[in-house]
Image 1 (cartoon, rainbow, N blue to C red):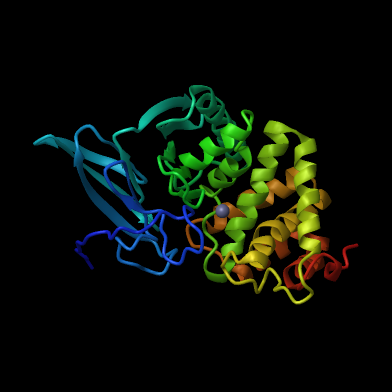
Image 2 (cartoon, rainbow, N blue to C red):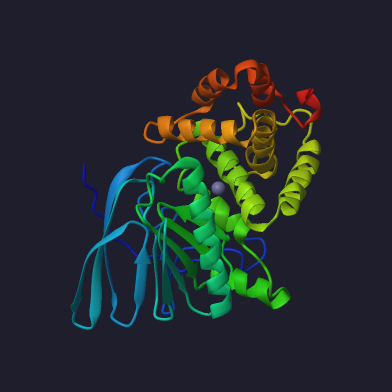
Length: 346
Ligand SMILES: [Zn+2]
């Protein structure tokens, strides 16, 4: 099936720039920048998460720099414009970001090439950032093998917007609001985005949970970001995160849904269950099994399901078999509603 469409993006206010927003988007088309992604009203909408083959043609004034998720297949200059073609197979989205202000810095690492795009951020910040991306990539590759989706290039694009939602991750590409980082830097020169960057990088592996099983994506990406903190920053910071998550999960109401029933949305409790409670479950089993066994099971789980997808029942079957005598606790973690008290941990 082939679908062709065209249209105009109406002037919609930017997400996060005014109170009581009902309609606001990260998507922009204006004289300073373009940002479009699948949650845009520009693209035809499929329910999120379905994979399809995407190709995209982008035409911009020649002084603009453009970057998309997916692979650039061709580029030509014609009449003061640059036309580029991009393609991504079996993907959920293709993001376009372009601006005349964009610069880029490329770093070659043993795990592949890192391409950072930015406009106003200081050089010092960008160097620290590429360093942390390299270390996270190397760590996750050593634990899980090569990611199946990113090829050998990781792009981190600081979209030159003022606010926006923060960060999103797509195949081989992370998109972060540059304005939000610049705001943070005025308050704290030493900020580190290792936690959120490592979370987004971990999604290069952890992106095959389907339907209700989307918690698998967030739980594993979040927990692996904590492991990156443990290995790249310090064990102390790792412990602080775990303590913070325990406190948050303890506050969940008695009837908050269990991991096996939590809907795939980030309402307040949904976020705490899918990111924090899930991470605590993985941490519980890592403590029981030790790092070596635990990460081997993670790797085998990834290898078995990354192409075919996994929901809660596939997760449960696979991990039950591998947990041996600890399997009863898996049912407890998956089925207990509310906070940690209902787990009756031994
Ligand atoms: Zn995530």
